[in-house]
Length: 336
Image (cartoon, rainbow, N blue to C red; front, side):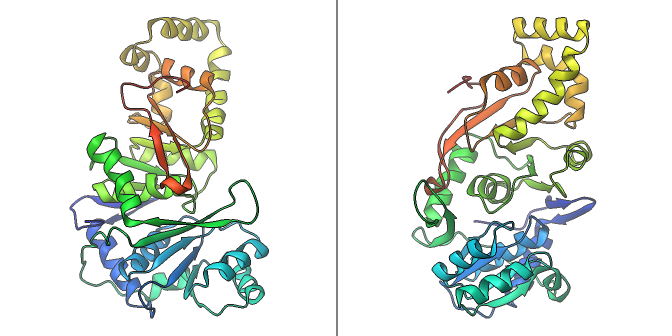
């Protein structure tokens, strides 16, 4: 089952909590507005928001292929994708619709344009219906990636591709579990955050907690207010946090000595006790920090371990949906 009714919370945005039953109900309501045949392409061109999730699953339930597009993309970039995939429907937000309409004109296509801000008001909640896993060979996603040469190519990802990834981190290695509260931080048009911070948590019954923006204040507030247990980020994100923490540690002789001691002892429980205030900055409940997209600086990794955090690093590519290899909890090797 791709998505099913559960008793716990599925999505959180600020103080708004959406249960699994409400999520499925919203998806049904959105789906009723999709006058589209199965196997058509549907573009989502929007910043992260709750309606992004509703639109995504409504399209999948209709048997369509979803095409997430960078909401900061230029008219030319978006027009190229539209011309290549010829979508029947495009979802965009109030903030992105101007670029989308220009891109549609430039590409010479004629999709139905649905504004997520307006969909939120029009969608009538209905009885929730579970969403089954589509057939193994069904193409669920078309994700455009520039690769190394030429124009962006649409990577076709099947139901089986996604399921193999989800099962590997929920059944074979239990990283995603029903009690995980995952921070939705990175833009969902990339396969890493799409699968890791939305599809996999909802598949396993966890909770996806959106940060309203990438501003540090919003991120910290979200971490502290919503008991986040799992963070997905890219190396630059962890490097920025690392610098902020280490600057404060190095500012005092006592904390420098304590940090050095923790580095020698290498005991996660002892480090969490020593650096309790650091952990509280992250809400006090973080189990794993997952890093992907590029190699994590080994000094950054080592220092987070010294502070008592567990880093899980993965290697992958869009074509692999995305995981190829990743470190197991309790077995991480820095630099692997």
